[in-house]
Amino acid sequence: MFLMETLASWIEKKIKTRGWKPADLARRAGIPSSTLSRVLNETRNAGPDVCRRLARALNVPPEQILRQAGHLPPASPEIEQEEEAVHLLRGLTEQARSYAISILRALAGVQPAPANQVSEQRAAYHVDQSGTSTEQLAHEIVQQLDTMTPEDQTRVIDLMRRLSSERPDDRAVSEQ
Image 1 (cartoon, rainbow, N blue to C red):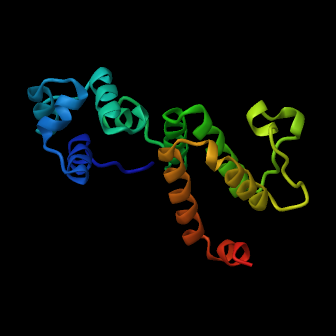
Image 2 (cartoon, rainbow, N blue to C red):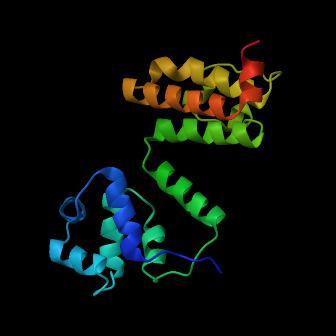
């Protein structure tokens, strides 16, 4: 069994991390400040609707708050990470989601789908099948950067920087 902090302390941490006040969260969630105040004072439990609204305002998976409020059983950290990944994927544009899936495949060492199974957008260019999945991914991203919005370009480049700093062995190989 996993120990969980109270919903109130969990929400307070999220508010503090964002530099918000409780009234900011209540406004963003579309709930009365008095409702949030009672949840934070632990004189009222947040119902499922309030939890979903808070999740949307905090941009976290609804399951996270529903668990904190006791509406769902606790989950392992791995399950929570999977739920967060799905939540984040759902918030992306179709194009960004496709890149995210490519990145996940490369990190997992899964070979790209055969050319006849990829979308028209990805089939529009050739990927050298002799390279590693990481090399293939890098080639795909470079080929597609020009088609992305500046915002998506920045996100992809930032992600690539984070991944290379987290995996020094891969960075050394890619610099050769």
